Length: 356
Image 1 (cartoon, rainbow, N blue to C red):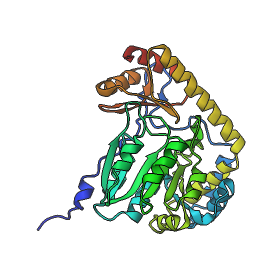
Image 2 (image 1 turned 45 degrees about the vertical axis):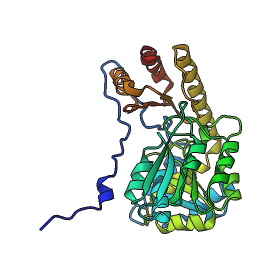
Image 3 (image 1 turned 90 degrees about the vertical axis):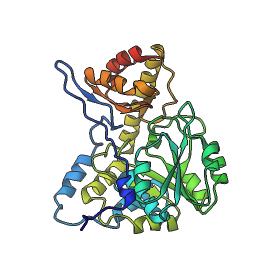
Image 4 (image 1 turned 180 degrees about the vertical axis):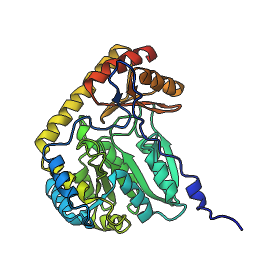
């Protein structure tokens, strides 16, 4: 007799490594800059909406996310039939693989990119095709298009790219989509779209409207500060959105999370002010890092990327010694979130010691 065994692909799933909290240091205020979280408290009205919703915790949430879809549809000017909600944008990646890939089908994406991609692809029994980013952390879209085969069912463009930072331009995205067969789903992962400040930035909504195979994935975790509630959504042509809803976990997005997301959408003025402040902090940090000798990849998310290679773990340890937790990727680099401005003095001091 043998014990039950999981499918072989389950045993091959790489572990997700979450950003660690800082270790307390005597005499120092510690800061967590390891998870790309929003340092601000909930937007006005959100805590009140969530508290009111929590009073109904004995009831199941609206499985159809009716009110949330209505609010999203109005905010973006899209039909509710073109929306699908999930537990964060990462939940949508799992659903995309589940909905569109047979075992052995291929999913093409840049690497290094969001570390949940290989987990979701492997969990779904599909095959990852990882295309190296360029030396400055950008998607090599020509190489990604060349990597598409008859087995490819999904390609993912993470823009801005997590963890390296650069974003794709509209011109480059249009040229890329034109090279992809129309039966292949093109996912534009826009988890950090609110932080992009560049010429020729992507207009995701206009792009999805022009193509029958484009899916946008977005989240309330970053700019909106709802990382603890897990609310993501996709915008896609109705047949694709319906497929995502069909494979979604029933009642996956809680009633409290839906209420918080709706209230967050109603606080756009305050949201934009907070985002602008974080963008200004990002620019200030990048300028200070350049002063101490760093040339970093273009930072378009709420984080900066240090291409440290084999020194990544040493850099993270040095940050930890001064009460700052960052996210190292062994052998590649370190991602530092844009958080509390008072933490950056210590980050710059450590960075100066590791400057190339």
